[in-house]
Length: 447
Ligand SMILES: Cc1ncc(COP(=O)(O)O)c(C=O)c1O
Image 1 (cartoon, helix red, strand yellow):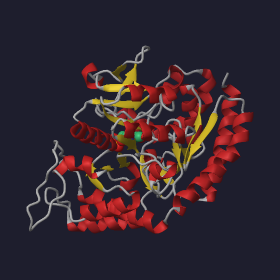
Image 2 (spheres, helix red, strand yellow):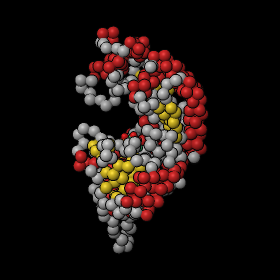
Image 3 (tube, protein in one colour):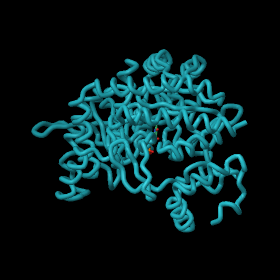
Image 4 (cartoon, protein in one colour):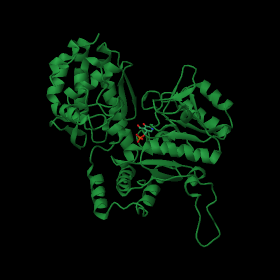
């Protein structure tokens, strides 16, 4: 493809030339495989002015805080697998656990011998009495809602604008101007979102709506801190949700996919001192292997198996069971990874999250002044070790991620960035310098 022949916004021509030169292998791979590979990962949104550099950076290997692409470029990784790689890429203790498990086999169907041990470790760290495993976060949230609906016998679930709870039909919702729940994307039927009550996040009016809906809701589902808005940390709102959930006898479900084990060892529940009835987790627990966890009170988890019972007496599983399945749930590799990760988190203690948060705060502080003086409409937001350099203008955000790639920082595919325990001071300096330099260059062309 001749870049010069394509439609290029002249403002971005120098960027496009440098970007294509640096990442040509990724570009060729995208051009070659696109006819066959239907790929949601495309790098950045297609805009006419820079269509020529819309392709994902293809990664060859990863270690610690770094990625290497197929052109041999090295990057400090800020995407960190959407928060998966809290402990860095390919940590030695996870690799050893995986190699050991590979040698023993990938048996499914028979109970995995690690599952019980991982459940106990998870329960110890989170204080959640019972839990079960699935393969993804989306599956975990869907399962939590099914358990809540089973126990309450109700169907409507309240959730909040600006949240993300995965991509399943019954959760991918948007609201129309009147506030009614509408399918969030083509292909999702209205019936899938009919039983959702979409409310404003961090709003007293929403509490009143929840009070008014007393006795009709199967669950109140909330991302305690929305990963898209990490600066909003509404402890008073979360406490109000707990109160209204208790008084209306509605299960409160925290989606801790991003906050769990990250903003505190015990996640948002511990951070805000608000205990949910059910919580969903995933991402970092598997260190790159697929995993989701639904954890909570016995009452809800008993919907999986009818509840605990004993040998040698007349006890029987007493709770109503729902359908719960999954060929790959508790798969041996995910369990081995989770055991290694939870053991590491337990041994490191809460200082791990505290140190990471302090380091992220230091970086964000250093970026305040250059961000302000760039004259560009970016704002900084942070919660724990995740942060955003945000703007309403999607094209401007994309432009920033291109400029960061040029400067050896991988900050693609998401605008919530993550620090891992593998990022050292030199990495933070490199990130800082890359962002400052990128902002300066963007400011020259952005009007
Ligand atoms: C808060 C939250 N819930 C659920 C999900 C869905 O998890 P998964 O992508 O593993 O299905 C995500 C993923 O980003 C998330 O951030």
